[in-house]
Image (cartoon, rainbow over all chains, first blue to last red; front, top):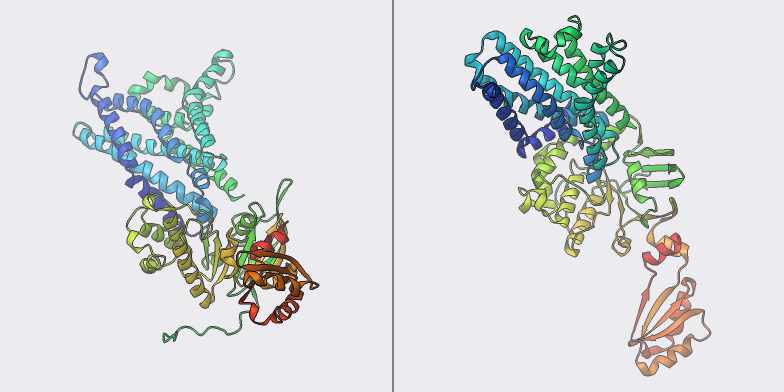
Length: 271
Length: 317
C-alpha cells in the first residue's frame, strides 16, 4: 500500500469540502445548535442562560444522535457510486492506484472534513463556555466532542460501504436514508419491543449487548453513563452493567463500527 | 526539417517484441459475450486502430487492457506484465488513458486537474503548464472545468493522458467534440509522440479520420477481431472493387463505353462531366491500358480506393 496515493485522494476530498463551504456550513450548524441548547435549553423551565454542562451535554447528545448520522450518511453515500455514475471512476482506477487505496483515501478525506467541522463547530462553543466550566466539565465536553467524531466516522463508514454496494446514486441515497431510520429510530424500538412482548422474561440480560450493535446507542452510553446526574435521568444505570460501560471498551466498539463496514466495502470493491 | 536538438537516438527498426499481447481474451457477462476470444498484438511504437460498431467489444477490450475489469478467460500482457498482477502498478505509470467522453472534476481548474492526476501518477507537476500549452489550453488554465466546452474538456483529458511521458497511450474516441482544426492539432501531437516511440491504441467512429493515420488496425465485431492489418492489406484481403473517375468531354462518353466493352468491369455510370467505372482490383491495369488507347480524349483519371468504411462494412457485416 502506498500512503501517498491515499493522501492524494484524501486531500482532494477534504479540500473539495472546504472549498465548497460544506465544512463551514456544517460547523456553523453545530455551533448554532450547541449555543442555543447551552443558553436556551432550559427556557421551558422558565430559565434562560447557561445552567449546567451535564444537562447541556445530555441535550446535545439527543440532538447529535439524529444529526451526525444523517450528515455522515449524506456526506458519504455517493463516494464511490458517484464517481462510477459520473464516469470518472475508470480514469481514477487507470492510475497507479489500488482500489483499496482509493477507498481509504475517499474515506479518510471525508472523515477529515466531518471531523474538522465537528471539532470546529462544537469546539467554538467549548471555548465560549470555557470560563464557566471547571476542568471536570471540560473533560466531559471534550469526551462529547470526541465521541461525536467517532459517531460521525462510524456512520460515514456505513455510508461508504453503501456507496460501494449500490448500483446507482438513487439507490445509494435510498439505502442511506433506510440506514438512518434503522439505527436512529427503529433499532431502539425493536429492542424495547422485544422486552415488552416477552414481558422482560427474555432479552433482559442481552439488552446491553444488543445496544452495542448500534453505534448511535454506543454514543449515547459513552456520554450519558459517565455523568451521574443524567445517568439516573435516562434510567441507564438500571439496565447497563458498569463493567460494559468502560469508555475504552465502548471506544473499541466504535472503532469496530468504523473498521467493519470499511473492510466489507474494501472486500466488495476489489471484485 | 533539420532537428538540431540532441534527441535520444531511436531505433531504426521497431522493437519486434509486442507491447500489448492478447491471447484468447474473453469477457462474458452471463450469457452476453462482450469479448469472445480476442487475439491481438500491438508492436512497440505503433499507432494501432481499433474499430467496430457500438457494442462490438472495443471499450470492454480497452477496459481489460487497462486492468479496469478482469477478463473471464485468456491472457493479457502489457509491456510484459500480466494485467491483473502485482507488477501492473509499475506498468500503469507508463500508461496514459483518455476514456471515451472523459469526465473530469467540474470544481477544479485546468491546472488543479493536472496537478491532481500528476500526484496520482507520481509525476512532478513542473511540466503541467507546458502540457496545457501543448493541447492549447494554457489560456484557460485557471478556469474551472465547469466552464469548459466539450472540446476543451477533451483536450484537458488528453493532457492528463500525456502526464509523465507515457510509453503507451490508450485513446478511446479521442476526437469526440473537437473541431476540425483541433483534430488536426491532435493528430500532429500523435505524430510527434510516434516519432518518440510511443505505442498508441486508438478507437474512432470516424473511419475516414483514422484510415490515413494508423499503422495497422483491427476490426472488431460481435466480440471478435474480424481482421487485422494495414488499411491497404485489409482492402486487398477484402478484395473490394475500386472506382475510376474518367474525365472526358460529354461527346466522348460513348467512345469510353466502347473501349470498356468486353473488359472485366462492373458498373459504368455517366456522371457530371465524367464517367465512373467500377472494376475489380486485379483488372486495374487492364482498364488503364484500355483507357490509354483513347489517347487525347481522356482529360484526367482518378483512382478511388475503397474507403476504410467500405472495408469495415465488408468485415463487420
